[in-house]
Image (cartoon, rainbow, N blue to C red; front, side, top):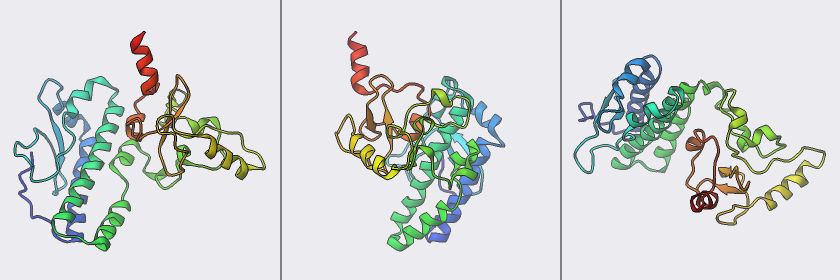
Length: 253
């Protein structure tokens, strides 16, 4: 629980410095101090949060009691999921939520002290130049600038239609890109046909190159992640995805 003992950042540089300090503390918790962090996240305890502090330290504590809180709060109850999944998957999940929390805190300060469009843009660019906590924890920081196979809209093969987890579980991944097609000399024509043919099973809209998609492993229909409330981070932990319709059919049987 953080009671703001540190000076409140008011400029872009101060907010970025605050971001870097909190980020460094969170990375320590999920890497060098991981054993200590794991032990403190006892599932038998109440809802716990992981806090990164501006002085590059971290703490696991209960959420603040005041409503609304002085600062945006981290993900609640990270300890409850600890024993329900493999340790590396749990750490990756905590890392994703920590990245989201850091952005929320930084842009809370920006909103509070009236950052304009240019200041917000400069702050985000400074933050975006650093690898995310998720990239550091999973070891994917070096590949972060490369286009992801799941969002590469050029020639695709079957492996690019599956979730790549940088492990031997690739074959069991959830499909997360539009239906794959074979590459040939008329790649541009096929891409146009593919985009016209791939529609969301929920809203009916056509495939968009800048949107996250996921495929049902039962009916093999494609859906916008936002339409079925599945994020890329959540999809990483799904071995077999069933759309709402297929899930309801199973329930009736």
